[in-house]
Image (cartoon, rainbow, N blue to C red; front, side, top):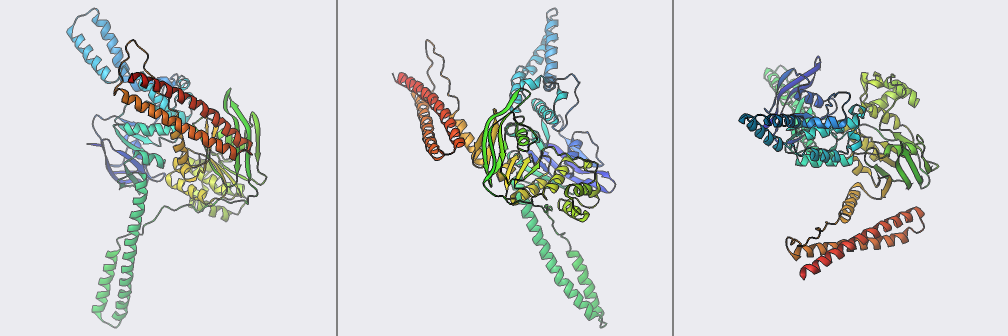
Amino acid sequence: MIDISVSNLSKEFEVGKKILDGLTFQVDQGERVGLLGRNGAGKTTLFRMLTGELDWDEGEIHIAPGKGLGLISQIPVYPPAYTVEDVLQTAFRRLHDMERELGELTGRMAGDSDPALLKRYDALSAAFEAGGGYDTATALNKVCNGLLISRDMRSQLFSSLSGGEKTRVNLARLILEDTDILLLDEPTNHLDLRATEWLEEYLDKYKGTVLAISHDRWFLDRVVQRVIEIQDGRAEFYAGNYSFYVEEKERRYQEKLKQYEKEQAKIGQLEKAAEQLRIWAYSGNDKTFKRAQSMEKRIERLRTTDKPTRERRLDMKFGEREFRGDEVLTIKELKKSFDGRTLFDHVNLEVVGGERIALLGDNGTGKSTLLKILLGEEEPDSGKLRMGPTVKVGYLPQIIHFDRPERNLVDTMLYAQDCSTQTARNRLAAFNFRGEDVFKPVSALSGGEQSRLRLCMLMDEKINLLILDEPTNHLDIASREWIEDAVAEYEGNLLFVSHDRYFIKQFATRIWMLEDGHITDFRGTFEEFRAARDRAGAQTAPPVKAEPEKKEKPKRPGGTKELEKQVAAAERAVAKAEERQYELSLKAEEVSSNYLELQKVYEEQKALEEEIAALYTQWEKLAAELEEARG
């Protein structure tokens, strides 16, 4: 069954410039489809048409009858007094209406024995139960926990939230409505890693249809099964996830390039032959002249393939300053609180030359605050911070700010970089700011374009410590790849905050995880960090609670065999923990001359000793139960 059908859709905002030009595609029931295309290709415009918010010029759109459709990017306007809880409860409006009617029917039946009332009550009661009317609180808490919407946040006025928080609440409301068709417009833009992973797991179990616009390549790989790319107003189709799309797009490019080159070679041969025939025709041979004309017509018929083009990458490279010495950054006992809440405390870190560090953590844990302290824009409550003597910092903030946004791009470059007009235009052109675009005021640029302009200005500085705060936010995939090319060329020190797992995977060689007021320092790649976290989570999983003692204990399923398995599992867990304890003792000897590292090892040893004690207790308990069961 087809859930969404789009046929020959066209839309023109400026005369002669069609943003959509005969767009045709369909999405079947239960499909997960990614909608790709550069910024301005018409993806969000299409979504507004699908929801009925925007009309189109030509073509047809059909949504399957009876199917509810929800768009994540639309944040409805609610009454000023609505709290987050009120907004979330609107997802259960139909169930609340049924509940009120059930209450009214109960009151009426107390004094009226009309069989019609009882029939209506029975039917409504069954529908209320089938719709999950008795489980709304459970569903609500589950979604709120997954998207990190706390109890305190649920009591806040919806109007007081930030744009990102409103997006998160709206996503929760949409999920709770159990919509048949989900239109997701950049759903991960305002989500941290934990909430994004929760959304991916939810969509994996979701039974409806998903059409997603996203520049999060990891998300696209995890969620979508098919890709539709809008290019020049039309649809290109790819039968796989994002990684398949990248490979297949390159394969098609190479295939078309070969076809074009083969065609051009043939045309070249024929043109040479036609030229020779024309020379001979000057002698008055009409037949030769006609042959030349016939060959030229054949050449025109052969011109069927346009030369394929790739998206132009930015011609950019960070200026680098020579780095002398190993010391880049030393942090000792750093502490920072905000509004009575401790963001982090007892932070002790040391950075040496050549390291590439990803600073990770949930939204609101203090990542950007830590960066501002490193940059001298914020003062810590206590602790010390020291930069190496030859360190020169380059910084790209999360929220881009220009002192004079009314200036055009050329003037902005002239004042900031103290360069000639031609040099400014050349640098802007390298960042795809060309023609009349360079005379736009900075205030007219999109968020992604402002990030690109700030990067353009940053490229010319001689730096050896590059600090990036969410560098890929608001950027389309092509722009993200441009930044990645520049960072890959950069050989200096790198510290960045990001929720873009593709970016983290590509560049991080060390992870700082900020959570619960402390930073876990992991030396390794993002994949190694995730694997270590998974192992740690498996080892410290809470033991299965034993049944409370009763006069007659119920028999365990499987008899003693199940107990034997649990005892063996407990023994393996103890053995692993003891093996780790031995490894830590060796590490303590290795770092005995480094106080900071030694302190970390001691803290890890202490935590591991407590874990081993708990594991032994669990093993002894299970072993005693097994002995009793064997009788």
